[in-house]
Image (cartoon, rainbow, N blue to C red; front, side, top):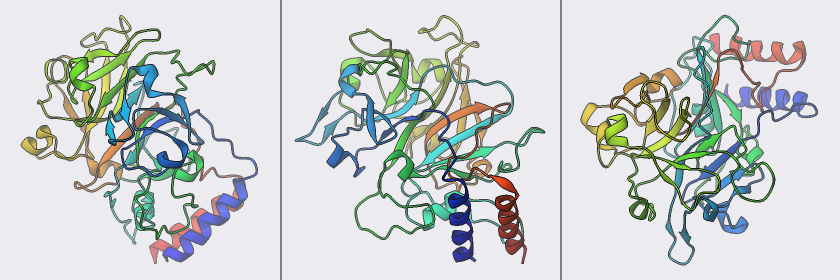
Amino acid sequence: MRGFRRFAVMIVIMLVSAGAALGDPDTFSIDRDSQVAIPKDLLPPDILAPGATINVPCEELGLTWNDLAGTGDDLNALSSGYDSFAGPPVLFFSVGRNTVGINGNPYLPYASDVYEEALSGQAAGDVFVTVYGHPGAPIWSAPVGQNMLHINQSELGLYPTLFATQDYTGAAPIDDLDALDFTEFDLDGDDEPDVNVYFSLDNASTSLGSLGATADDILLFVPGAASAVVFADGVTDIGLALGDDIDALVLLDLKDRGEVTPFADRAFFSLAPGSPTLVTNGYSAADIFYTNFDGDFVREFLASDLGLLETDDVDALEIQPGAYVPEPHTLALVGTGALLLIGIIRRKRLK
């Protein structure tokens, strides 16, 4: 069954490869163990563009990395602060290397590309999409609890450079996309950000002390500034615990841009595995939380809503409103032949 699905997906990719556009410009970051960084001189605190190339080097954000020691900052959550919270959300996300995903139910037309990509050994560099049901959802949209591949890691220039239909059988750690945004931050090619950069650093980041910040804080770099500042205090503004690590972020800085405004500004976020808030409350690193910066937060989506297990990890997040649903880069459907092919796949699963 898995072999048939892989063949079918390959045919779909061949049908659309000539005319499918990538859509929104994507920026992202990679974690400390990503292999693509070695030959391309990319760093965990850099903001990257597909290629993989540097969109904003870490030095322009006041962040650091020591090549010899292999220590420094890891930018692991990213937003431009313009994310829309209008209408039912379309959530785009990436997952950690140990994520497994929920296996699709063989008796239902259940889409679970995280599970399929994890079986192939290449889920951590991919971007997936889960669309929460609404009347205007296109045919490819995944219902609650299901997910579909939106961007394969090879489209971003990440390792391994394999199609989604292939297995990775190598020994080196695969790349892990650990921050995501649908905004280009450097618009004029001078390496400097032209819009606000909202981000978080992981617990091992060496710049946290000099910034007077912790990994539960949301940081802000304003174009032209000398360094980043704390935009939102994780404990005071969000209700998190010291030791928590925000590792995925969607943010709308709606009022008094550059200053957190309770009840006006809002955010979705996830927390890294081992964060005290997860342990104390029995939450998952694949759960998505919401805050309006009034000193508290709520769990908005469960791991299972995204087709993930409680033991999985969402480590990058982006959003689009339900009124705007871009086609998946790798599964854009062109013509009735592709639609029929998807129908064949689903009928096979009913047997």
